[in-house]
Image (tube, rainbow, N blue to C red; front, side):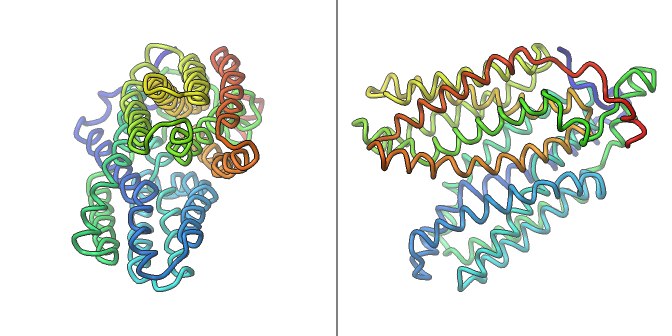
Length: 416
């Protein structure tokens, strides 16, 4: 395995252009993760009490946001092709600003749900599909490590968001918080407009880099999606995000049932998230040294070990060991699943395929519901962790042995 086969040699682009594109894409991705999913619960605690919403009504906003983000995933690929990477990021910032502004005006659940829909669409347009496409075009054969840093910064935003939002809400209230987020989104959109530029058509750059128009197969999304490689990547990402979503939702309750304190449960959850963040930063470089499919298999195996340990984690040592194993596997699997479609199908098609993967991972939202149903029937969450461990372990071997498709389908070039 070598680095991503995309884009021209680095010397073909000014360094300032590469790093301003990285800075703009990373800034909006950091903000997305800081200001949406991980921070929403902080605002809802105050907002729901003020507007007299029930916990069910307030919690439904998470579902609306998740569904809007997942179901709008194809828009990321469409915007990437029609508007380019910069245009997609700017459109995402505009949708975020509109969503935050609408949230600040909310008096009813209907208006707030409409705001969540706008935020979900903004997350898609400003998120990792256009961002990865943009970075793959600029950084060429060094894109793997850059994408790893980009994903790490996004994860770091998710860690930074909640305490910042707590401070803002306590200082000025929830309506002012949403207005501050509106201004921040508009400012970030302006930064992306001024600082970010697109590098050019990645597929053409591939042929220039290798010296022959026929040296690299040309894929279309329609031909890439039925391949076993796509199906395995998709299954791995769904399994990863389902286990991550479930773990975030039930870990504290699960460990409390096993005798731990709530504080210990929160620390274990944080340890896994921090581990995943750091591993994401290192995984991009690892993808240049080791086949990403091997790293994907290792990531799935580490998640399986973490889930198996969590199923019966009665002591602090086993609890923190499970968090470290799960977090490391999460980071490896997430980055590998992002790199592999680019590596196999090229930058443009690979990024569009990632949008399909993101759409299908909407099913991960069912994980916490399944965990709750299992807990109601069995009296605990251990069985769901055991099921996740088995599924992740079964996927690990075929993913680790996976190789790139040998050739593009016949008539692939004509189909484009």
